[in-house]
Image (cartoon, rainbow, N blue to C red):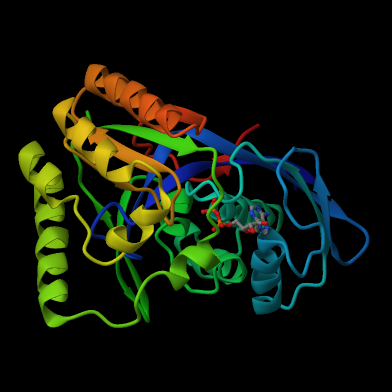
Length: 308
Ligand code: ADP
């Protein structure tokens, strides 16, 4: 049995427009890397070999909390070192904490001889994600673990649906150099919505799933609007409304905020448009004196896996 494994887990785009807390997809890149190693200490030790600002205290690190949930379920007292080579910066809105959680529980579960299925590991990863965001939301965790385009039909019990989608969808993702913490960003969203908002939002979610299923690109584009989070969160992303108009003019299907922001994503049906969108995003943020990092990526089916 292995003593140590290097695990990789993808970045993810969550919410995906109308699918607030319900939808997410995995990107081909960037991918996080975490080494999971048995130790003889009967406790979890965090070793951060990356530049990322993550807690060293196991009680505050999402990965150790996620692992503890798995160990508690099977009453296991073994100790593990978690050696972080983080490639996805916390607070970037592409599921940094989720990839840390899925990589950790997946790695420890493998070292323990696959006690849980990949699907069942999601509940443990969620226990870790909870301490980063203060809420139980699986829209980063589920695609980070399983790959693909995911819909979470229910949280109690958790019911995850893998959606069909056109294989030539390309995602342009730009991370402006601003930090918005999920915990803060969630406070911007009202606890209650009106019946009219609920109807409009449901229409977009249903139409997005239909568009993805039938390769109806125009329908995907029309459905990528959000009435719950986008109106509140977009105020904290300088230039957001100009960006939305410019991206539409350059031919993307649609755009929205990735997760709780500040990253934004656009979906295109070809690589050329996706590249143009990256330039438009970069230039629009530069006009606001904000540097940014961009990624152009397909949707990944791979999810969390052993690296070597
Ligand atoms: P993201 O959407 O990129 O995950 P969040 O703001 O939701 O961004 O989560 C990042 C928060 O979780 C940060 O406050 C970070 O310090 C905390 N955190 C704790 N442990 C980890 C970890 N192992 N990996 C990433 N973030 C972690």
